[in-house]
Every structure is written in C-alpha cells, then in structure tokens.
Image (cartoon, helix red, strand yellow):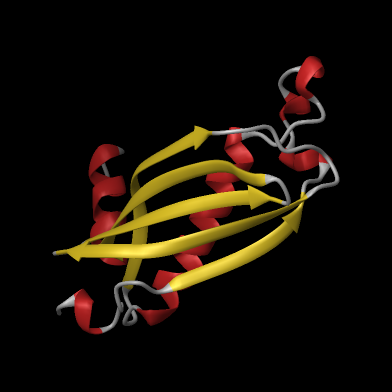
Length: 134
C-alpha cells in the first residue's frame, strides 16, 4: 500500500489548549511550576499526529513513534491559551514525517518534528513476544 494515497501532504491538525497544571514543569521542578513543559508539547504533538494518521489506516495497521524533537522558543505560562499546529510534511515508505508549531498570543513558544512508522499490529506483538522470550 502506498501511504501517500491516503495521507495528503500538507494536511494540518490544530488544537488550542489552556495551559493547566498538568502541562507545566511543576511536577518536576517547583521553580518552574508556572511554565509549559517540553513533555506537554511532545504529548500534544503526538496526540495530533496520531489523530491525523491512525484513523486513515486500514485495519491491522497502527503508527508508532520513531523519533521526536521539540525545541523551546519562549516561555508560555499557566492559564494561557497555546495553539498547537501539526502538519504532515512527507511520506517515505512506511515513515510519516510531521512538524509542529506551538504559539501563544505573543508568538511561537515551541516547534518540533516527529517521525512515525506505520506497522502491522501483529508484527509489533510478535516483536514484543520475541523480546520477552515467548
């Protein structure tokens, strides 16, 4: 199957979310409890990429994360709205590449990329069994 036929390059998914305490670094560092965390940016980027990709896949296929990169550009704080925009940039074989920009009302706060691989669920389960010696 050619994934390019079901995954149009340039597809965009957007989410605006208010920075909550669970999105801040406070659970790791008290001094940073007001600031949007890198982990929350990564989690939101992954959520949007999966929502964009997985529903279009035939039964038995799923996407898995291969590599992610998030760069913090400016601080966003608790209570602010942050708009996350994830774009599907390219498809190469079973690999799908996304980019992300997160912005608050003052401008960009983070950017990132993510590579996901489309795999058969059964192959994934087989690899787990092999690793566990089953």
